[in-house]
Length: 282
Ligand SMILES: [Zn+2]
Ligand SMILES: [Zn+2]
Image 1 (tube, protein in one colour):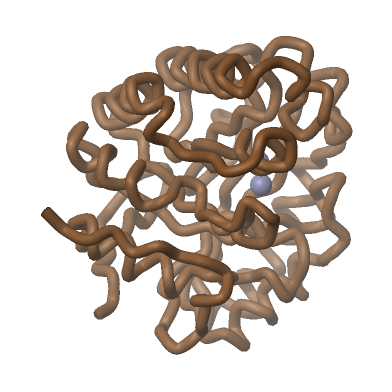
Image 2 (cartoon, protein in one colour):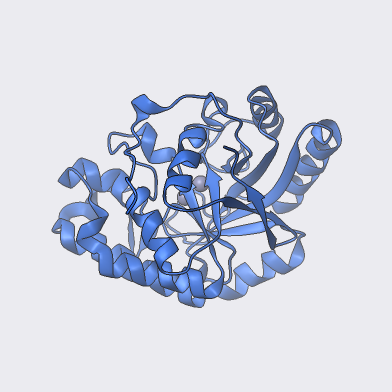
């Protein structure tokens, strides 16, 4: 047995080299104002060696980011950043696909058209409800969380992507509605999700955005990461989900100690949608 450390925002410190931040938004996402250049500069200041831009590609008509992403302009911008910062920073081309299982033809088209290093699958909507809308949480907690994980299992089983983003993002506002979130209450549903990821070779992202919210946990937290290993998962990536320059790399050094404590020795790096192991620094 191993002790599972509890990560809180108070324990965050930037004392360790951060090898990777694969979840950085730019002003090509509807909910971000920072430019790609500014995000590159923020990563260089923190001495992060490898970043990935991962803007929203959302096809749900009700989503605020619906039809916002401009792929050609994004790629031009990425190319300029690679020319300007490529000596010090490896810049990966990622994309955050919203509900990819519901829009398979369109998602496949954008994945085929451009030279992505990785694509992330994200679930922000369950049926006609966004999990960022308080009205999603009008049902009992049990129902709200279970519906989320059941839909997530469908998404992973049927869609094409490389990394599962923020596996339990539903807790971000679920916490505001119901109080403390404990994944053990939904272990069976979460293990189903993790098993499908492991079987399909899909990497699990550890996302630090919920550390910046009252829920104050990584997504996922340590216990879920330990289940992922037990279910055969070996690929994990780090993501700050930064929408502001000051959030680049946020909390990722502390995540690495959690990953090591549950048995992970490597992060997954992606190039041209092929994963390779990168050792987690000691
Ligand atoms: Zn997301
Ligand atoms: Zn995101």
